[in-house]
Length: 150
Ligand code: ASC
Image (cartoon, rainbow, N blue to C red; front, side):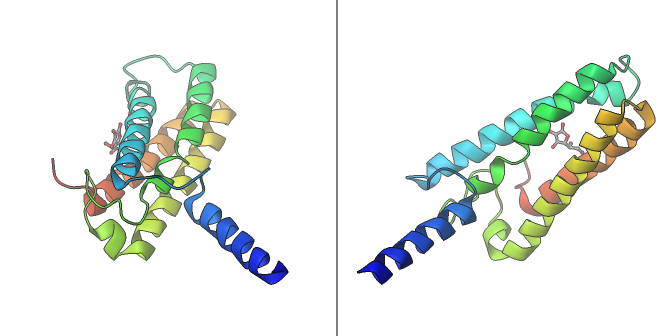
């Protein structure tokens, strides 16, 4: 009996760890809506910094730092939404056919985000501009590989 409970508990913990979220999605379409909502917020918080990086709008170090702090939380969200059985939406099937490649793309993006956070926290415009560009490249390469053509 104790062993059975231990097995069930460790299976539940593994499931939580695998999805990095509170709970499983009830339906595939819930996961699709969740990840696409998270991506939309990431696109907004990222995209609104582009005019600053392009020097079309003055650099305000405190605003960029605060925005990147929000973005670094948002950046953690979409991944649980690529759950098994949630194929579809804007995702190519390659997300599920090539899980190692997709995980690598996630890791590359999160590593670029970490560098963007360091750069934004430094308050140095050129460091921000370079890290912003590199993060955008990681967005694009993952979209090119794993997002359907619009
Ligand atoms: C964005 C957005 C993306 C990336 C990408 C960067 O603002 O929505 O998908 O930047 O275009 O190259």
